[in-house]
Image 1 (cartoon, rainbow, N blue to C red):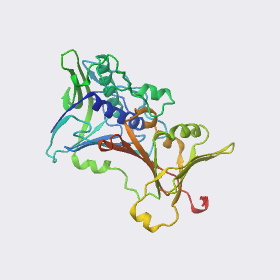
Image 2 (cartoon, rainbow, N blue to C red):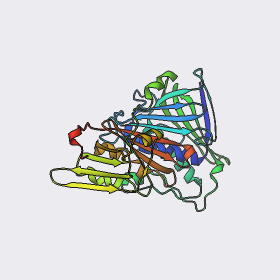
Image 3 (cartoon, one colour):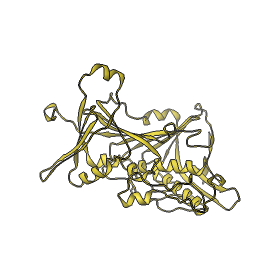
Image 4 (cartoon, rainbow, N blue to C red):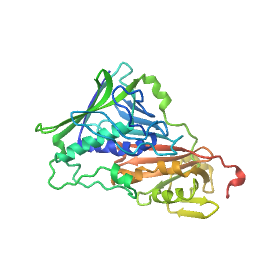
Length: 366
């Protein structure tokens, strides 16, 4: 079994951007080499074409940060699992060549497929430390300042890596090698950063647990029915700040959507009733549904506010320009799905699957 890849600074930044919000679901960050707590709810799949990440909310047993370092240590990642994330699933897919890697080589007896468990908080910390090392040595990440999509919390400011472009050298002089190797006799995902002039040499090792390739079938995204409502949002209309305020008032949020391009968020407690409306959204219509329905389809879901907020953390931590758009899918009495398309579109995507409460017919407003 062998995996080795080369990444430019912008590839490391992209992977870090994707992992930061997902790692908030699983927690972890404890242990190190030799730890029995490797995994914490995240499994990674590698083949010659793609890198896939599968995470389950609430799987991590710790909420503090940490990691393993060799030759360029890094400390606590800070900020583990969000409370109330149990039951949420997140699935990400990134294109390998011309996506997340400059080049890579993968070999295994299982058709060149490698599957392993990893602590996503430790990997997030290693990626952040790698970016910080490059930034300290004058690395440039595309010449633009990284600005969050929507930033209203201290956690977002701490978890989002930023770099300025003044007086920076080209990031092409920095190469990060990501590979699977043994450290202390244990398998690890290693990040080795080097500079062309030899002024930088930093190594990080994140323990992993190698799985059989066929075990990936247990980490596939949930199979769901065709959504009743699919609405595309533009990035200038984030849901997170509204959900954040509603969560402080009620543990339950009612999400009502219509294929007429409308959605509302509603809470109804003993003290107050609040409803927020979104209109002029873009309906995503399947051919079958467009032919079979004359009236715009509607759907109402009852969702835990903590789970919904946890699935929107990417709106505060991901840099502007790294996301193209996002789609909200409502499946009656089954699931709420948040599908996020990265920018450019051919780089990949990540999707949150949020469980919902059952609503009987007499509880619907329509």
